[in-house]
Image 1: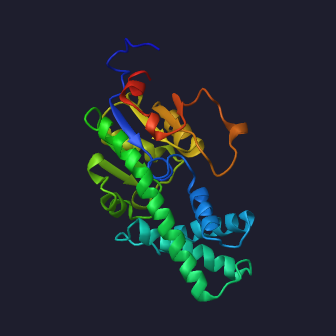
Image 2 (image 1 turned 120 degrees about the vertical axis):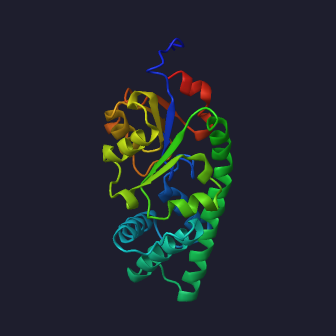
Image 3 (image 1 turned 60 degrees about the horizontal axis):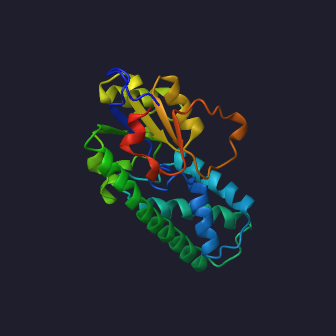
Length: 250
């Protein structure tokens, strides 16, 4: 690796994705939820759950169920409630309503506690990087990302937070990453984007000329047929592998 990099190509700023990158360490949220369903003994199939998950995501995108003041536990309660209602309405989840409500609460709590644990490792990475780089967050979210960052004590790491529900642009549209680059006040070539989604993070950020670090983990689907391994500047298996030394080598 070339260690004699010019000032104009040296990484001077970072853009982070949030969901799936910082909060689950590159495990897609569908799998986090499914693992919680299994742990709580919810008697549905994976295919049934996946359909309910998609329904839940579409519902939350269309209906203002998530409010700006909702923290992560609030969000999870609402999300799982929508999913389990859908499963019951289709006759796939055959339990009493009181049982459904209890399962919803237990799943939400299990996922929330899992995120708190993962974020301890992510926080160590952010602690190491913050003194060296200005950092911006760019996230597809529901309008409550600021509340979630405060709840998890992450808000002080980012100079700017760009949220899809606020700016009206969603990944994989490169324009949302351009907003992040603009907030850093530097050329895209000096910005590294860190994300867990090849299609939604790595490809659009690379198209702007950013360096990209793909945290490749357990995705929603197998993207292997559509992946160009030369597109990411670096591929990691965990957020914990993201170090100042690695960034200096990009």
